[in-house]
Image (cartoon, rainbow over all chains, first blue to last red; front, side, top):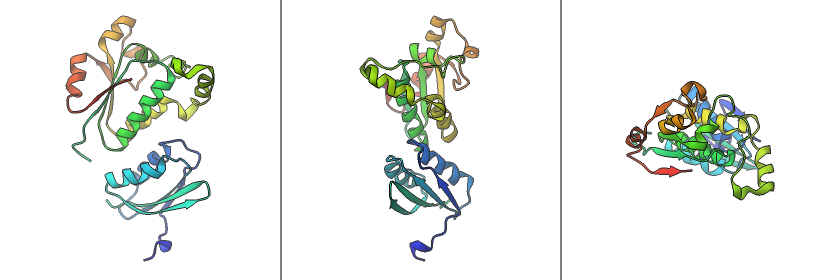
Length: 81
Length: 138
């Protein structure tokens, strides 16, 4: 499967939220979801660039893709467990 | 995410900039799976009074008038440090204790404090909880 074929189970627009709001929103979505779910988070918070990969690694989830867009980034995370 | 060292924060200052900085450290540690152990003393404890927790508590001297104005505008609604601490409690293991000595100084009980505060604790009990990690004084 190529990356472009990953379809999010849920997409969250956290643009405009201050650090660490987008990360907390992602954590909530991962906890509420089921293994295999793919969560997409849009964030304009600069801290998310470091925080989301750090949390995903720590929580042993899977960072599928980070896409830089104009003025924000799109984080695609799969709930591994 | 087991076995992480506890982050212990002693909050002394009651200005909103320092309380915001402390709340951000707490939520970050909690998100990363670290237990957080907070001890409220003096002016920080005073800022946690139930009837005035969201009232403006001023800024540290280094803020100056411009920094103070910037801070005032940044504390509305969900950005207030008390909301950040509620989020920290939602996301992880965060305990907030009022220093027994400071509650005596102010003549207050737990009923006078915001529900964010879990209990009133002596310093030795706090140090017991803090034994496995660093203590940061803010």
